[in-house]
Image (cartoon, rainbow, N blue to C red; front, top):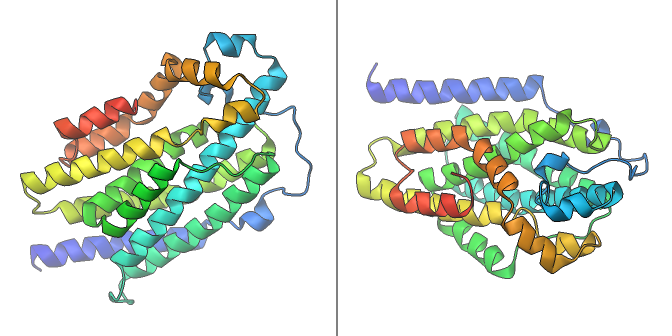
Length: 299
């Protein structure tokens, strides 16, 4: 068996394992999540420690009710940003597997992942609505940049960007799903997403490694920068500036203190330690890329 045959066999084995896992452990959010019980405003929407204002002077001045209201809006904003990126992800994966061999387990896994993402997006949308939040969207510039990225990104650039978005969400949601201060239905949503996204992250890592085989330094420099730029706009769009006014806060002061909040920056950096190690080992953590990761407080 040639080295190429071994690589193909290994990729197929990974896809089969993921398909088996999806068959064994997948969820139907329409039935698993308690959509009928009215929202209990005594709960947070996310772990308070993940709030953009946690640890600031403004947070200390807020009443517990205001803090809970803010985390509910922040969680809804993160969910809405997740929907936006999941739509980008689905289009990139569909384009990548267009007209390829449908008997290939990787092809079948790709369709399984897209089906998962469709359910996740509906789940996030219903969750945000139940939290009593409006529709939060990235800024128009970011939406248009996302439109361009999903059209032109391919190979390792597409899969590494998918991995960044999924990894950052994964770490914070693992905290939220275990936190009894968080609304029970939000914890269920996070649990479903964490379980099913773990398979997506494994696939994204495998595809990134696979596409980078034989890649030269220039290609890694270009794609490393593309992934970093995409990551910057994804992460900085997670919590909309509109959440503060909608939570009844002084938006100008809240934005100012959130920007300077070292606690939140530290939370983001710690959540991305493993991700940065992977990107470094793949040759995608270039000097130019690091500038954008530092600006997004991911490193």
